[in-house]
Structure formats: structure tokens, C-alpha cells
Image 1 (cartoon, rainbow, N blue to C red):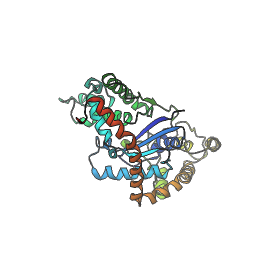
Image 2: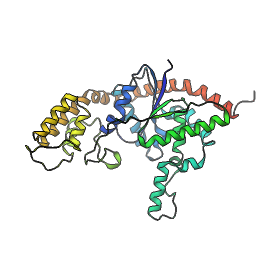
Image 3: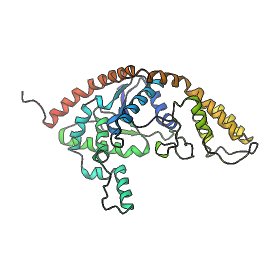
Image 4: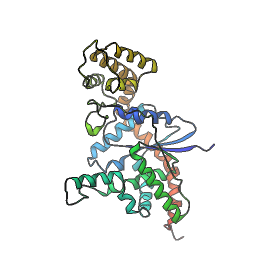
Length: 336
């Protein structure tokens, strides 16, 4: 049976938080161990430049994210783990795809339209104010990320489905002009993927500044959990776990038996301070071993770099010969 090629990109801006872990990192780590799959995981550092023009932040984030995935047990023997910028064929393919992608298709991208709508809502005379070509062309670079390895499946959130559809459109257009070279990728959306609420009850997000960094030191983790907003019900008063940030976060880390036990304690009126203590202990016990590995890895950037270079070598063993094939298809080759 032929293995499915599955590709996941990780943008190198910011520090991974508990929401990232529960919603994307944990299931991806599990998937990296699947012997029936051919998984690719990459640090999307060129994508990061669209919104972040702080070199040190991009560099530090790349280090932290690579260390995070390795500390959590990414299987680099089964999976290919690399940095986008170490595979130059991606950028060359991006230009080839730019030359077949229609501007009208890019005009319909949700991210671009959202900024235009925001400009128009403020009566800005220029609807494209603040929009760089990186943002406008983002779906093309994403298509190149996927198509250079002919990925069959791309796990994404619902907000990214359109980009996979665009990659399919661009691949089909290239195939129509130059012959069949690309498989058409499929978006894989986990309808059961967990999302965590942040400190203020809204979805945990860096843009809301309400996150709990995944590998916060023990004291800081406890302090952040104590900041999670709750209602004013007193100890002893029955509490409803529905829409409770403490309960939903606990549920993401606990077994069914543990969740049932806490649900009963809510009915009995557990104090919010006690529930925060229970939550802290559950999360801390869960992440402590990986946090120790992460802290050791951060002090050994050479080891992380070695892992990424080995991954890039595996990736380029596929991308380099394929790019030569694509060059020939479009008419770019040596005379003799």
C-alpha cells in the first residue's frame, strides 16, 4: 500500500502556547509516528516575514518551535522535519506557480479581503493600504510548500481550507498547461480538534494576549492559571462546567474518569481556588517531562540545527530532482 504524504507547516512567530499544543501540536506529534504515512513538518520561516519584520524574533521563534516539537517527541526517523528556507526549490516553484495563478483567484483570498474590508470600513482612500505582496501572494507560497512534495493530505483549520482549494486550482492550471506533474491535495479538517479558551475566556490566541505559554516555568504556570477568569459563585455552590474555561482546559488533559470525577465536584460546589490548583497540577504533571527536555534543547542549538539539516537533506532528495523535472516542463534547461 502506497503511503499518503501529509504536510504540516508551522509559522515561526511567537512562542507555542497550550492552545497550539492541544489543537495542533499534540495530534501532529502522534501522526508523525504513523508507519503508514509519509509526514512532512516544516518551520515556515519565509511565511513569517509577511507579518513579522523583526529578525531576532523570527530567529528566536524558529529555535523555540523546533525545540518544542523535538521535546514533545516528534519522530524524525519516520517524519521529515525541516526549515522552509533550507529547501530553495520551494521558492523557485513558488515563482513558477505565480506565473500560472490568476490575480482574480488571489483577490478572493480571505486574508486579503479582510484587510481590504477593514480599510474600506475606515473610509480609507486606498483599499490596499498596509498590504504587502507577501500577504497577497501567501496562497501561492503555501501551494508551493504543498506541491513540491506532492502532498496528498494537508491538516488545516477551517480558516485554511480556502488555501488548499487554491493550491488545487493552481496545480490543476499548471497541469493543464505543462502536463500532469502535481497531485491535487486534500484538506484534512479534524472536526473534533480541541480549542482552548484563554485567560479572559476568549479563544486562546497571541492576538488577544491571553495565552499560557506551553513550557512556562512551574511558578509562572501557576500564576497564569490563577489569572483565568471565573464567575462569582462561592465555595459550596453548585457550578456548571459548561462554558467554564477551567473545566474545558482540564478536560483537554485528563482521562474520561478524571473528567467525570471533576464534573461531580462541580456539582458539589468545588471552590474556584481549589479547581485552579487541580488544573495546575494536572497540566504541570503532563508537560513537566517535555519541559525539561525543551530547556535542555534550547541550550543546545547545534543539536537542533543538526536535526533540521538532516531533515532538509531528506526533503531535498525529493524536491531537487522534481524541480529539475518541472524546469524542463516549463522550458528552462541547458542547451546541451
